[in-house]
Amino acid sequence: MAAFYIHIPYCKQVCFYCDFHFRVAMKDQSAMLKAMLKEMAYRKDYLRLNGESGKIPIDTLYFGGGTPSLLSIAELSMLLKGVQEFCIPSPTAEITLEANPDDLTENYLSALRNLGFNRLSIGVQSFCDEDLRLMNRRHTAQEAWQAVERAQRKGFDNINMDLIYGLPSMNLQRWQHNLDKALALNVPHLSAYHLTIEPQTVFGVRQRKGADFSVAEEDSAAQFELLTDACEKAGYEHYEISNFARPGCYSRHNTAYWRGIPYIGIGPSAHSCNGASRQWNVSNNHRYIALMDNPETEEWFEREILSPSEAFNDFILTGLRTQWGVEISQIREKWSQTIADTFVHRASGYIQHEFMKENNGTYTLTRKGKLIADRIASDLFEV
Image (cartoon, rainbow, N blue to C red):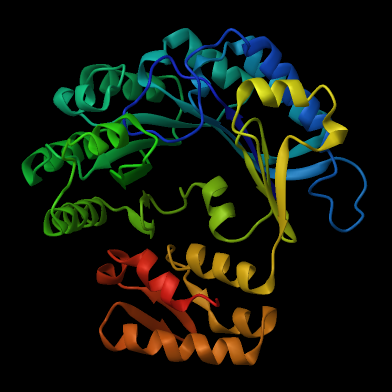
């Protein structure tokens, strides 16, 4: 089984923290969707590594962005039919749409269900209007609450809500309010991300001009601890550093990324990996559309063949973020005993200081270790 991703590169307005590829101008939307269908047709064999015939089975289909909920039902239907020309979703496939709360009308939700979407990822970000204004979100806290309730009434029982913490104006009381509101809605999945100031975002530009978006490390750690405690108390499993789910309700699509399952990405800036190589499409709408007139030129993406060390580093970076961790037996089998021994030696210091733990050859991060996960992973990399 493989995972399929479609990137919808449009938004109604700019969220000040976002560094994903999108454009506000949507005049080329029709041409964009046609270009995506061309890419699907050209890449129909991308995930075919072992000479299989017939349609490629997929277990997850994910519409991300950008804001996929800006597409009409007819446009979503057209893309779904394009996928189904070359792939066959499993009978229990997870089919997700990322959505803004204010797009989720009753009619739109009913039509999504009829199309086969069975999971929503709703960009709530905060249940405080002051936070939403700071981030330039286009919905209010009340609209977010109502959208989730509306989706539940329409039969969506597999819902994720995105939240952001570590905002410069956020204190523990406000973060607790956000968590209380989110948990009261009783959705099966929560994703909570610490604000990161990326250079090309509005926040990044403002920071270079002197604005201060910094948050003290102890405040960030306290908010993370509050998040973890609240979710665990409410019965959620902390299965990835930024993700919490009821038992059995993990995001199967994101889990595919973290566990090294092959995936294909369609659309500008979308990434793909088939195990042997990874590639990423151009992050320019106009150029992507133009190049898809002649996809055989293959000028619309860059590709790199993964070296053994790069593949190992990816394995460590993604594996340590999850509750499944890193198994030393896999390192030994996929790479070498020497690399396995080096990993064990480097990990021993983190185990001694209780940033990591080892159980029957599986290495995972402790809660303390999750606070510095990227630092630990980089120390364990093969250069």
